[in-house]
Image (cartoon, rainbow, N blue to C red; front, side):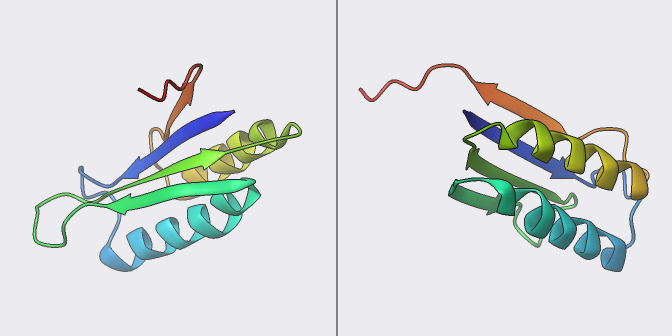
Length: 93
C-alpha cells in the first residue's frame, strides 16, 4: 500500500520548536514503519507556512499501525488533522 502522509502548521498553532518536534516524531515513529520511503518533501523555509509530506509504502499490515501512531502524535501536538492519502493504483506511463 502506498500512502502520502502530510502534516502542516499553516495556522501557526505550533511554535518553531514544537513544529520541529512534531516533524521529527512523525518521521521517526510513523515513516519508519514503512517498508520503503519513496520520498520526503518540506515547504520552502522562506514561505509563510510549514508543511511536510512523505510517500510511504507499507506491507504486512504496518499501515494501520502507522495510521494509529500518526493520530496519537497529532493529538499530542493539538493538530486538527494529518492527511493520510492512500493510493489505490499506481500507473507507470
